[in-house]
Length: 88
Image (cartoon, rainbow, N blue to C red; front, side, top):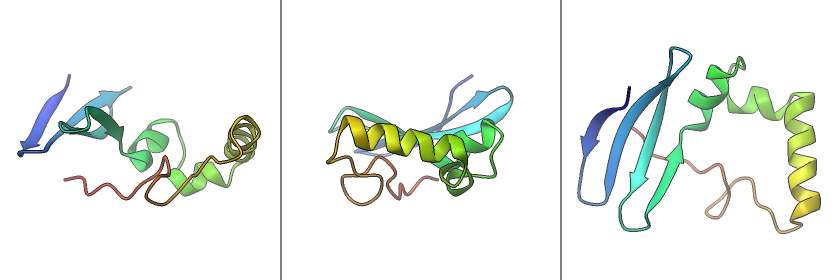
């Protein structure tokens, strides 16, 4: 069940659950983009967080696959899929 935590002009912050685990999201109204908190997602999948997943065989395989499909693929930074989202 989705629960809105806070809503401001540009963003809506909310929380939802996956198998009982809380996962935070941020919706950017101006860009019409939904982002997920990586650590929350990977904890729900059984890892201790994002970096635990990235250091696993499964994570390294996923990175390699993405790099083969798109050599310009960025993991971190302003254009990366894992950005520092200032989630509540």
